[in-house]
Amino acid sequence: MKTPFLALLALGCASAHPTEPLYQPPSVIEMPAFGSNAQVLEVPATVRAGIPFAITYATFGSSSCSRHRTPETSAGADFLLILPRLAPIPPGTPCTEDLATVRHTISMTWPTPIAELRIIVRGVRFDGTGVDVVRRIRVE
Image 1: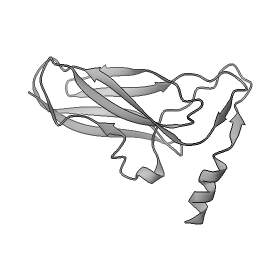
Image 2 (image 1 turned 135 degrees about the horizontal axis):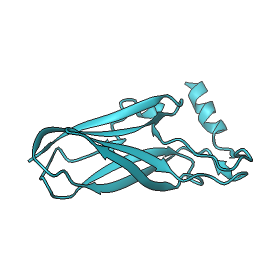
Image 3 (image 1 turned 120 degrees about the vertical axis):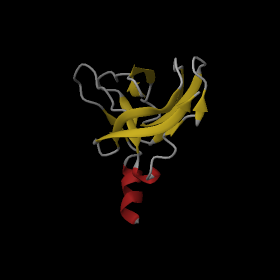
Image 4 (image 1 turned 90 degrees about the vertical axis):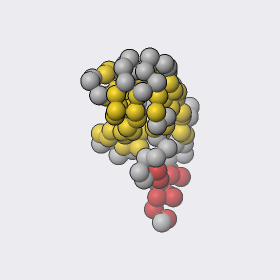
């Protein structure tokens, strides 16, 4: 268990990003320490059609450089897709890699009743591979 601890200590140092125009940080939504990603996405089990409800999701990254932007969203017949977005980082900006958890809450509505609506947050794991976190809710 010493290896993960040492890796986390190494991430505590500040590092400057490349001198290219802007660095676009990835939307990290899954960390090894969170396993099943249970804390990543919180939604009510049941909502009412046409009434706004809260969706809370978490991103992980540098507390000094992770700046939340409005997520991209899209919807299909039975799903709502949320793509978290972080603001670009100017060249040469030193960012600490302290693995902060940043929680975001957005308000959404679903127009009609549906037995199972999938709420999907799409981002990347800490290792850079893509991942979807999915919750199923009922819209009455």
